[in-house]
Image (cartoon, rainbow, N blue to C red; front, top):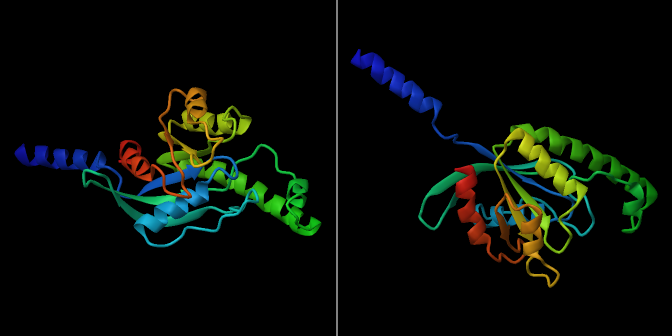
Length: 210
C-alpha cells in the first residue's frame, strides 16, 4: 500500500508541476511598443534583439518567438519562458493609412494584406498563451474598441494578464487613465525604450507567469 501511495503522490506531483516552457505573449494595438519591449527583454537576458521597430504601424506582421528566456527577480528566483511578440491588433486596416507614411500604392496594399493576416494570427495564437502582457501607449486614450476587444478576449479565455502602460518618458503619458480604464488589472508604467521601471515589470512577471 505504501508503494502505491508513493506512486500516486508522484503522479499528482507531476500533474500539478509548473510548466517549464511557459508561453508569454505580448499583445496590444499597433505602435504601443510591443516589439520595443520584446527587444528590451531579449537585450537584458539574451544580449540580442527580437525584431525591428518602426514609427509606421504594423511593422511586426508575423508572429515572432524567442525561446528559453530565463530571468531572475530581486529575490533570486528564476523564471523561464518563450516570448511571443504578436502583430498589433486593429479593428480596421486600410492601405490608404500606409500611403500617408510615404509608401507607394502597391507596397501599401501588400502591407495592409500582411497586417490583416497578422491580426488573424495574433487572435489564433491566444489559445496558445499561458500569460499575456497587454502593451498600451500611455499617451493615447485607453478607452478604445481594440483595447476592450483584446482584454475581453483574454477574460473569456481566463488567461492571466498584466497591463503595461508604455512610453512613460513622454509628457503626454497618463498611467492613471489606463488604470481607471481597467481597474481590475495591475498596470505598470514603463518606458520600454529607455528602461524606466523595467525591473518592476520583471518582478511582476513572477506573479502572473510563475
